[in-house]
Length: 385
Image (cartoon, rainbow, N blue to C red):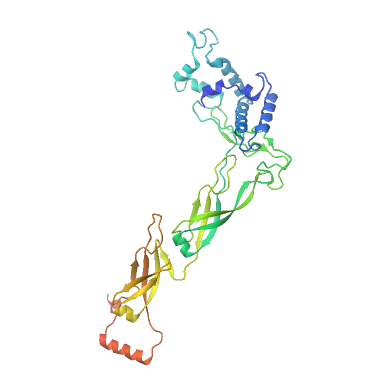
């Protein structure tokens, strides 16, 4: 809002008092309007909220003796939209007169803007302090879920029970016991803000220390929320867990935490995900891992074997002759789903099984095999260098 808009406003008319009204009359008039139009008493009523803000703005000027004096002088000087010189000068807007629009259009930085800035305790062009109540962002809420390994890989939707703060249902967020209403804070006159101790032209505002920014004082507190206007609320929400989530990962759902106060934004919901391990599958990034047992003849001679997939099907895997223990084979597209719709791979590592017990025939066959391949020392490399 420009300085011109402030000067053209009739704050006395807004509060319904005369220009020579006393400080007590101004205070009583504002309190009456605040009680009748406070947003806490009329949730969703835009007209009442607008009336409350206009009255708060008027009271912030007329309720301050120094600001009121400067406001009266400014309106006397610029009343009616035209500039009136104390001595001499032409008619407003006429020959020799100066129109207010021209003054604001042609005033350079540091000129009239500074003069009008003094009236309202701030420099012209600086953001005006809000006369409304302090908006507070709702608190963030955390929840935990445990899902299966396959659900983490492919994604799933789960129910999350959350305990957060919301407007007290017993008092509808006013903090006052049924049958009573909060009183307008005498310190901030219902605005929820008060000037800091800095003083001077460039004053700053901070939440009122008596009402903590609510603009209201509760004298007969609600039995449920004890005057805070907030209470614990338990609710269940359906949360989509994206494909590829990992154990211990936190998922943020914006705006699904505790509701804000006085029109402030809601907080966020953070869901901590725990993933149960799988009996045979493991995970490495977007790839799934599996250990596949093979017999010594299969590893030595080569074989075609079947390997299970997480999705429930089977894939064929060709083991070349002479495959060593621990060799890993890659099966394309059978791994973890990615955000772009693609899938990682399935990494199958072979594990050569050694029989725990051999009969006489098997022992004789192995000795014959050893004689056939000849002597060799696979550990010779361990002793070199």
